[in-house]
Image 1 (cartoon, helix red, strand yellow):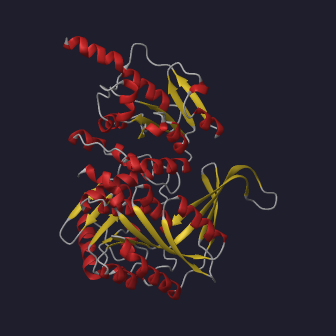
Image 2 (image 1 turned 30 degrees about the horizontal axis):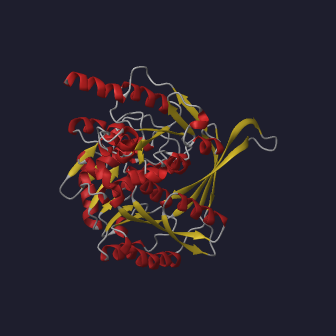
Length: 482
């Protein structure tokens, strides 16, 4: 496996086609039983709307930095408008077809104390005529992408799936299917299919032994005209099966909180990694890791490149490779983190020679929130501030060292002449919840403090570790040299 592929995630161009829906959650506390019927009374305190179904698959790809488009069917109603607004915020290029006579599919859940009390489904199945409208939209959009992913929730959007696959393959695209129909021949021509164990059995798969599973999977691939199968096997992990090879991937050891949406994460990660240039085997290995991360979270969760990189720690130790979020992607990742309710902490500096004082300071800053963003003076800025002999280490190397620290989530350079070598403009772009500065500062003298306070955030000043500074490190080195 080459982790350089993680630096190329934005090269993945994926079109997701399928059953989109709105997932709506009412959160509240339960303290009594209704006098009208033997049911709990939930006092609603919060409402949360999320992209569901095929839209959740697209969201997973977007959060992995893939370039993703989405085709689906919605009604001309408020739920459809809400879903479109969510997709825009999630950086998804949606092209949803309006069906006047049917509602947008919505799953409405009442949650109390992390338990689902009841689910209400608002849906009417779409018909072949509606699916053919989606087929025509596919013909218009397919050339913009390299991969086409069909997410089938059996709600009718993919009634014309055979014709859709033919269009995608005719355009030279790699096709992946998350199936719901037990007749796999409907997906003839697909390159990958990702059934779970139950779907595999309904399609005719035999799980009585490992040999029977492999043999029946290959028979299904042969008779259905499909290239490869990624079989998700719950606690047994996953198996990638082709006509000639089989690779097994054990389940990642995680504390399982919620398996909702895990299948979406698997196929989204598989497709994105293929789009970034990974082999099928390596892409499945990463998808398996992503599934382990996803099920450790509540709800239909997504996985970030940073989380994948951390879980690939053993590989990093063996090869010395390191993943660093591309500078141009950081602001988008920060937005996703905010949407997930995470607290963003910001600090800045030159960090020319990393020392113990820096490490302690950054760890203290990270402890104040969920994610730490470090604004890093660029080389020209340091030269203006510290003199022509600085920096000792160039920007790229300083950023790599910082991003390797467990306390640091993202690094963003700053320091143009127009910015007067201060991070004020960058702080306005990040708009952190907490701004941290090291040293003997008054809050009103800290660049960006006014903006953070006006946005309802906090500004914290931390003391540096006595005797630790880059200047002292340089002086010691010069003395030893002399």
